[in-house]
Amino acid sequence: MSAWVLPDHIADVLPSEARHIEELRRQLLDTARGYGYELVMPPLLEHLESLLSGTGEALDLQTFKLVDQLSGRSMGLRADTTPQVARIDAHLLNREGVARLCYCGPVLHTRPDRPHATREPLQFGAEIYGHAGLEADTEVLLLALDCLHASGLGDGMLVDLADARIVRALFAGVPVDASALARVHAALVAKDASELHALTRNFPAPSRDGLRALVQLYGDASVLDEAAKALKGTPAVSAALAGLKQLADSLGGDSARRISFDLADLRGYAYYSGMRFGIYVPGAVDALVRGGRYDEVGAVFGRNRPAVGFSLDVRELVGVLPARGLRAAIRAPWSDAAGLRQAIAGLRKAGEIVVCVLPGHGSEIDEFHCDRELVEQAGQWQVRAI
Image (cartoon, rainbow, N blue to C red; front, side, top):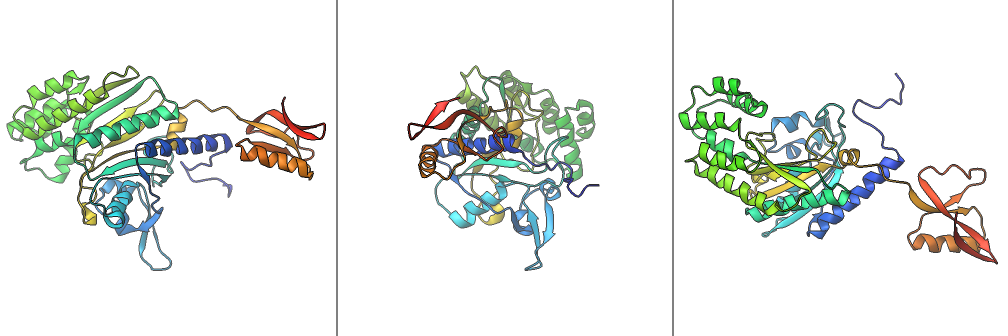
C-alpha cells in the first residue's frame, strides 16, 4: 500500500471545491451574524470527561480517543460541537439572558454516518440558550432555511417536523427496561407495526394504543388532527401538537418548500427534549440540516437552561449545489517594474484577483478565468479585456 493513501472516508479537498466550501462557510456565518449570533471557536481536542459529559452512547462510539502526552489524561477529538458550546455558555459566558452562538469547524467520526459519507464533516451550527418559548424554535428554523437560501438552494426543500415529548409522554409510567425501550424505538423508526404490536402487548392500554398509532402518523398537516384524536387525554402530547401546528403556521405561505410531520421519527431521541426538525433538499440522501430543542444539554455543566439549535455539514452542502464557475481574474506579466507593481497593488486593494504569470508558464492558470489583462500603454499600466 502506498504511504500516500489516506484512511477510508478521509479525503483531501482540492482547489475548486475548497474555494466553494470556504465561500459557503463565510456566507453561512454572515447569515447567522445577521440574526445576531456570535461566533465561538471551541477546541478540536478536549479532556474526554468534558467532551462526553452528558452525551449518549452513540457520540461516545463516534469519538476518537487518545492519551495526552503532557498530563497522561484521556483526550477526545470532538465528534459534535454542541456539547462544547453548551460548556461555553455555562462556564465561560455565564450570561443571565439569551445567548445566540454560532460556529463552523471540523469534527471527526470514528465511522461514517452512512455509506460514502466523510468522517471529517465541516460542521456549521447556530444555537440559542436561555429562552424556552416557541419564538426561539421558530427563529432557529427560519435561520436554517435562510442559510440554505443564502447558499443557493431554492425550490424543492422539505421541512419535516416532530416532537420528542410525544413518545416520552406515551412511555410515562410504563415499566420497561432500557433494552426493551430501544427495541420499541427501533420499531417506531422502521414503522414496523407487527414488531411494535408484539413489543407493546403488555403495556398499559393508553401507552400501547398511542405507540401503535404513531406508526401511521406521518404526512401533511392533517396528521396533527389525526394525532389529536388518536392520542387524546395526554396534556404533554396536546402541548407538543399545538406547538408543531404553530411552528408550521409560522413557516406557511412559501411555495418553495413543503412541510411534513413524522411523529414516530425518533432519530436523536436520547438528545432532543422537544421540537425537532430535518430539512431535506433535492440531491441529498438524508436530511441536510437537523436541529431541535435540547434543554438538558447544559445540565452536566451545572447550568440546565433552555437550548435550541441546528447544524449541517458544509462539505455535504457543497455536494448538492452546482459547481461554481472559475473566478474572474486579471492576468499580469511578471516584472520588477515599479509602475507595474503599484498598478497590481492598487487592483488587489480594490478587491481584484491579479495573477502574475511566471516566465514560461503563461497557460497554466487552472482555478481562475483571466478575462482581462494588465498591459502598458503610453507608459501607463491599464486593464483591458481579453
